Length: 521
Image (cartoon, rainbow, N blue to C red; front, side, top):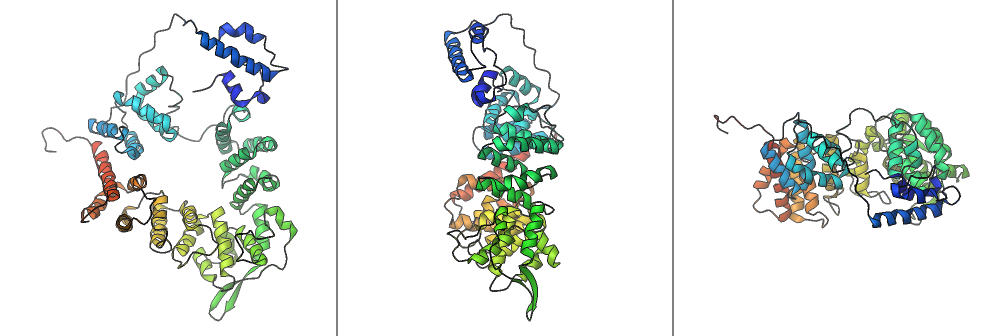
């Protein structure tokens, strides 16, 4: 619910006070006018709190003459079938809570609305889950909107599924006086429609922002900085006193190969890496830099290796950092090969590890779709994970985040049967979130059954197996259930997995039209 002006003041503080807030109750107007908001705003705010608390404690006389509330407008859409409504009640009662979003999405696609009796528990779920509120607002129908107005719950159902690009707010009030989530949303919205305006607002506010705020705003920029934001990233954010802010600014700049930062980084690294013809074929050779250039520090390159990187000498550490700032797409263009070919060229026994670590760092900061798949498959097929490399599961998740589902599935299955088989089995398939391709259901079931029988990972519990069952395609549910039915015994996790698959089948069947009464079902 939207706070009143006085509550907003108490949240933001008097330093951002533009004008005194109005008295919260008419009975306080005389005492409120005596408060000195101009010279002693802190004292006035505290006195206002005391006055407000006294007025609430003393009670109030309810106003008379309430206008009769307008009735609910008639519904223009049909209610969900009774069978689907029963499925929804089972979900809301806790039988399969992970299926709620799937039910709502299906209800929306079929242009149904929920039954009136299901609105209160559905509103309770909206309180706990902001992500599904727009969908709930749409399937709640006219009665849901009427009930939300009547119970002062309109903030829970803000707008039924907005379509098209977000419009920029009419003024900068939210940016100037909002709390951090509101300001981040404002920045996100305005960047889409008025990038110059958003960049100017961020640059003007940057010196006064806290480190947490600066980091939050850079997270909004993410890996898609606009042309107008490049000067702030280059000249200011890269020199920030907070390490996390500098790192996030570097990651953002690496997503722009045309930026001055990336061009500068490539010019430095290109003189170190060359393609050399050897008897066994072409091979990448790395020449370590002779000395550390102090100018490198401006781009975040450190002179001394950290304590946890003792296995790499100082010169190799400098080369690793220089390579880490260059997107892989520049190397493939430079050597005239694709990503898979580039990885095959990296076979020099003395420097291959340093080069690969640099590429891994670059891909972790800025995974490029044209090279991420080849790099992920290369890592999945290794016999041993690179020493001192990033943790395998988070890196592989980062690499597959932008891949098509089929390509991501190939990486996950290759990693589960390869580099992750010993010591990290099940972690990548569980941590990933993309839908399982229908043609890969058999391979996924083979991997899943292997875990469910051995249970090698103690963290793989009921909630995880339920979420995994949600990712299987509807067309693949019969095949997955057939595989499970052929098992002589099933453990508790396998039964949970099968129960969710069966529940999802029932959910989709409940939305199918019933056959005419004169025909057999």
